[in-house]
Image 1 (spheres, rainbow, N blue to C red):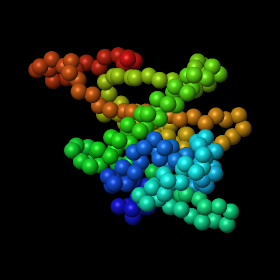
Image 2: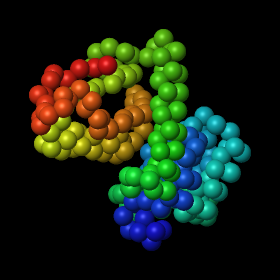
Image 3: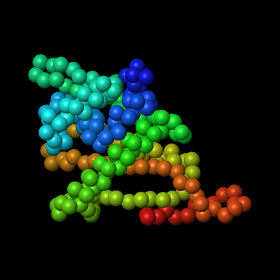
Image 4: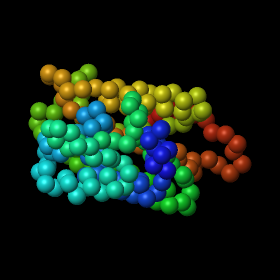
Length: 206
C-alpha cells in the first residue's frame, strides 16, 4: 500500500487513513501540502499558530503511518509528504461496511470540526469580508437534482477550486483561506410510490 501511495498519492489503507483522524494531523498534512510538500517544524508552527513542541508527537505518528517522511537537511529536519511531485494526497473511499469507510468517516468528522472552528473564528472578527466579489466567509447548504452531466460539471468545478488553492503561494496582500466542502447523494424520500422519475426542481439553499 505504501508503494502504491508513493506512485499515485492515493491512500486507501484503513490503518493509514486512521492516522489522519484527528484535526491537528489533518491540519499538518494540509499545511505541508500548502507549503509545497515539505516543511520544517518551525514553519508548521508558524503556519498553524501552535507551539513547535506540541507538533512532534503528531508528526512522528504521521511518519510511522507512512504518510510523511522525515528528511535531514543541513539547516533543519523537514517533514515531506509521501507523494510524487505535482501530486496531492487523496483518500480513496471503499463504501459499505468496510474498515476503510469507518476510517474515512472519522477523518470527515475531524474536517467538519476544523470547518466549524474556522468559520466561528472568522465570524468573530469584525474585519472579515462577508459581501461582494472579495467575500471570504460563506456557509451554505445547497440541495438540488443533478444528472450525470451535472455531476461531471460539479466535480470539474471542485477540482478547479482545489487546483487553484493548492497551486497558490504566499503573496504580498494575499490572505490564507480554507475551503471545506461536502458532496453527498440523498435518498429522495419525497418520491411517490410508483413514480419512475422526479422533476428537476429549482435548486435552493437550506
